[in-house]
Each structure stands twice: as structure tokens, then as C-alpha cells.
Image 1 (cartoon, one colour):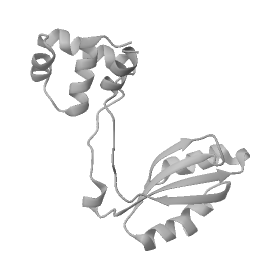
Image 2: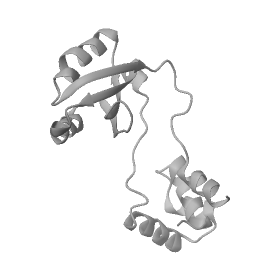
Image 3: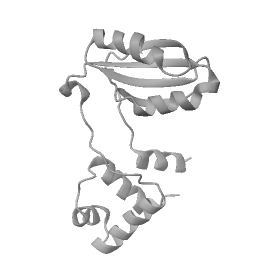
Image 4: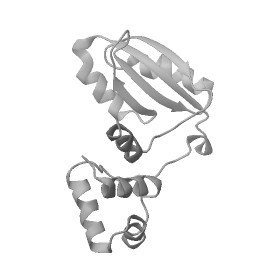
Length: 156
């Protein structure tokens, strides 16, 4: 589990992964080398899986975001998952319990593109039997601080 220093490091990197080790070390109260070693240990343990940039899809013209529940013929699940991995408009895919087998988060530029995505592309992925689409009206919360979440669960 993360100790308080590791939580501080993770929280700081969640806010700004581009911060320098000097600034990060100062923020968490360590010198540069021990801070670097802790970050490296977090990376080696797989806690930090990588670094990325958060992009605003709407600023790139992707004005539609939808969540699609997908039911498939289970014997084609591997082919379906491979096709999902390769599709550039599917942001996330989760295997789920309940009525649907998967939940997809997708982006498109407009309603016509969403219609095409659903009828022409998604419906033809391997094994797809049924889809149910919900439109995102606006984002209320887009992410969490995992450092804060770990701290919250350790308080109980």
C-alpha cells in the first residue's frame, strides 16, 4: 500500500505529470534523489503505469460523447475486444455484469457521425447482437485523484 509520502507524490503527479523532480521533491518534502527513487519504485510496481496528456475532445471537434451498452455472442468476445482495441473513436471499453456484456465510451463529431458509428461500424463488430446508447449531456466529474481515494479508504 502507499504510505503518506507516496500518496503525496502520486497526488502531485496526477495534478501535473510534467513537473520536474526538483519541484516534486520540494513539494513532498524530500530531496531530489530519494524522490526519484520513490517515483521509480511506483513505476516498477505498476502503480504508475505511464504519463499522458488530457485532451479536451470538444476542442478538437468531437462534440458528441456517448456510452453504449453492448451485448455480444460470447464465443466472439476475443474478436470483439480486438476490434474495440483497434477502433479510434472508442475511448474506453469495460466488460460488465448485468444485461450488457460491455460498456463503451465513444466520441464522434456530430449526430450523423454517431448514427454512422452505430449502424455501420459498431453493429458490424464481431459478435454484436444488441446495443443501447446513452448520450452524455455534460461532464460532471471526469476523473478522481487515486492518491486521495487510497487515503480515503485507509481512514476507515
